[in-house]
Image (cartoon, rainbow, N blue to C red; front, side, top):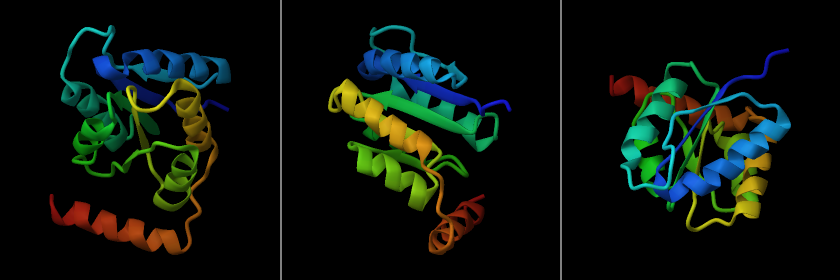
Amino acid sequence: MQKELIYIGSDHGGYLLKQAIKDCLDHKGIPYKDVGSNSAEIVRYPTYAEAVAVAVSEHRASKGILICSTGIGMSIVANRFKGVRASLCTDSYMGRITRAHNDSNILCLGGKITGELEALDILENWLSTEFEGGRHSISLGMIEALDNDRI
């Protein structure tokens, strides 16, 4: 069975953490597409957030991972796209709960605020947790209605 594709992007502030995450994904055999940046040289995060969010919104990717210095900018941009539920996570509990309750499809991390080991633990929880559905589906339906009202 083919695993679903994850898009991953970062700006300069998230570049080093992105490399560690790519190593983790490689180790797990999870396919991904890196949309950049390709170094720690200064770039603008909206470019990479848009590339990942559009791929998720258009269902070319099942999930996405975005990393900037704090994760805040990436999450702001990504959540502008229909069907995207980007979640900034700073600990493993958040990584698990955002999947279980919010069906998060983009994980945002802060390369300058979250250590590598913690970020990898967040990633593990985010990847391994399924959406619980049930009462949480009501909220997702409300979010989807907001998306549809704004078209």
